[in-house]
Structures are given as structure tokens and as C-alpha cells.
Image (cartoon, rainbow, N blue to C red):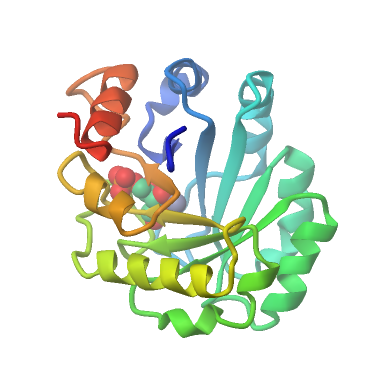
Length: 227
Ligand code: DX5
Ligand code: ZN
């Protein structure tokens, strides 16, 4: 049993044939599909809404995979019911955007989805200390959110280790430690060694260099030091 999983981020997929790309990733063994929702306000980019989540939901759930929705939006409370109705299994909001984080987390859980909280690279990890026991997932950003294809911020690795320590100290092994941004075959092994359990990978999965299955295979081999 691998101690980690990969969640391909469809932000880097070919949107002219999104359904095919999602199926290819699922056929290649992906157990999670990561969806980046951006509103042009919280981050300087505009991407996907509940309609796209609903469109790919049947594909994802047909093979028991998980729809992992990352909300980089202002006032996420306004859209949480809509994304849950669309079929999100996990909904992740940003600590930087939620004044009433406890209320928002429980709004997600009461709605029947799993609750995640994301944290930007420069935000102190201590901001999550109180809410950690209520979470199903914590997402450590290793790039500044807003775009795929960015470069991994090197000091993110020690943040991942510290977050792993915070979870272990509190015996919160059920909380997924997700890392998102700039993950490649060159750095995936150190990220797993630092304690990540879920790896969001976009441009290293969806690209012109190789097909999705081969890219996922290369990443798994690199993560396990089998290159
Ligand atoms: C960035 C997003 C990421 C991004 C990852 O704001 O949250 O999920 O799509 O893409 P790569 O792996 O290309 O950095
Ligand atoms: Zn993301």
C-alpha cells in the first residue's frame, strides 16, 4: 500500500477534450481528480465553476474516485451549497479568506462533503492550529495560487515536515496532508519523505512530453525512488 496518492489537477488538461483527459487519468489509476476554482479576485485568474464539476462527476464517481475541489475564491460560503450539489467530495477553502473558518468548515461537513483548508506559502502554519482536529484535509500550497506550471518554492518542504509534525503531535492521522504546486519528478520524492499523503500535480501529468499514463508512472517511480 503506497503511503501517498496523486491527484491530477485538470487545470493543465486540454479543455477541448476534458472528459477524455479525465478518463485517461482515471484509467491510469488516479483515485482523486483535483479541480482548481478561481474567481479572478482571490487569485488573478478565472477558471472553473460548479457546471464543470457536475459535468465530470459521473466519470469520476463511476470508478469510485474522489472529486477534490480547491476553492480559490472570495466568500466561498456563497457557493459551497452549489459545489456540493454539483458533486464535490472534498471542498477546500483558504484560511486567508475565511473570517469564520469554524463555521465554514462545518457548513461543508453538514452539507455532506469532506472539509479541507488550504494555506498560502507565506501564511504561518500556526493559523491552522485550532481548526486542525475538525478537518478531513489540509492543503499546503507550494506555489502562490493562481496558475499551473509554476516553480516549486524550495522552503515548502520544511513547511510540509512541520505540518506533518503538527498532525502527528495531535494524533490526526485521518487528516490528509495535501501538497499543491510545482511538483515534478525532480522533487516528488522529498515531498513524500517530508510527510505529504496527497500530491496535486498538474503540468507534470498533462503535457505534450508524454501521455498521461506514462507521466503518472514516471512520477510514481520517482516518488518511490525507482527511477
Ligand atoms: C495553483 C493550483 C494548482 C495547480 C497545480 O493555484 O492550485 O492545483 O493547478 O499545477 P502544477 O502542478 O502545474 O503546479
Ligand atoms: Zn489546486
